[in-house]
Length: 386
Image (tube, rainbow, N blue to C red; front, side, top):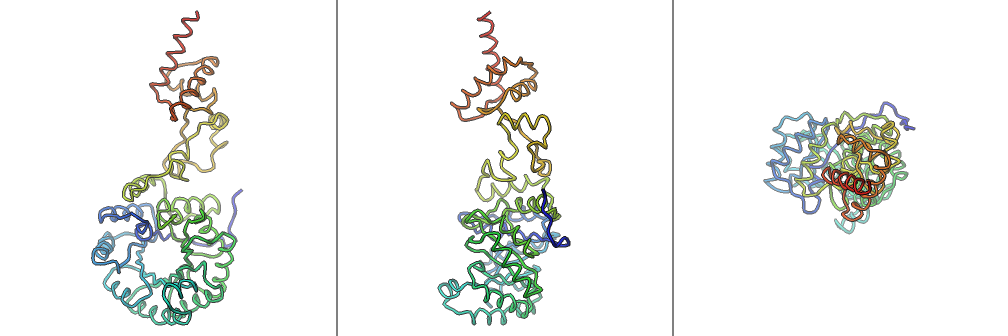
């Protein structure tokens, strides 16, 4: 049974960061042409926002940002900066809509990473956010390591961001240590002290990035960060395809992101990142709509809704029935019928035995030529016995 959010009017904006945090994944480096292709395809899907780079990385990075802005995309474009004046100056002249000014907000990172204190963090927000606004940018204050921040101090940070002129606050679960119930609670707390747009940036170290992202929306988040396949640092981020489908199927929230042609960008990002897609990767893996077990195949043949939680057509895909150790006779009869061979049930049982032996030995599904060979062997055996 689908859940319905209490705030039915809630609008959720996908802010995809494949081109920033996705590329920060160890060993990933997109070429300019790959970046342009990824940006175009994200835009063609209807992704409304993209975080496209880090100006402080150098001239080449800034040129790639400029090239993306020249594509005249429909999406709003963001860049990421540290909460530093020199970083902010490097954004000058870039035709982007928003800058994310990121600053640590946990005592661990404030003290051990920067050698500063909480008072300094609040002063930097008060000092630099107005500068970014004066440069013509909308501002998102990115709270690095928000999930490990003192809750009371985090509320002060959010209030300071709003007072300084920011339009959005990004809650970053930088180390991927949050869980959904805690996420709902902290977003409700932030919503109670500010009118800012609130954004969730989740990492998947505990396998909870998508769950935490959906929880943030229940808590009042207006924006969420995603990447294609969940690409990103360490265990990655919340996957674009999971968040979009989760919102649609669990909460009946449409994001205006159309995944019917998702296979195109899925293949592109896999190739460009050098990260193959796992066979069982949710939503996009080859195995997601592939069925072998006899009881499932029989149910699908009778009515796809018996074993269909997500319609593969939403992703431009369809169910695939394969033969293996756990297949039943109905699958055998269907497979051979598609080859123009009508089997008796006894024949199907005998061939099923051959298939089970074959897949146990080879660890793969038999192909057409092998199915024909099993049938020929069965026919020869029948002739000999006659």
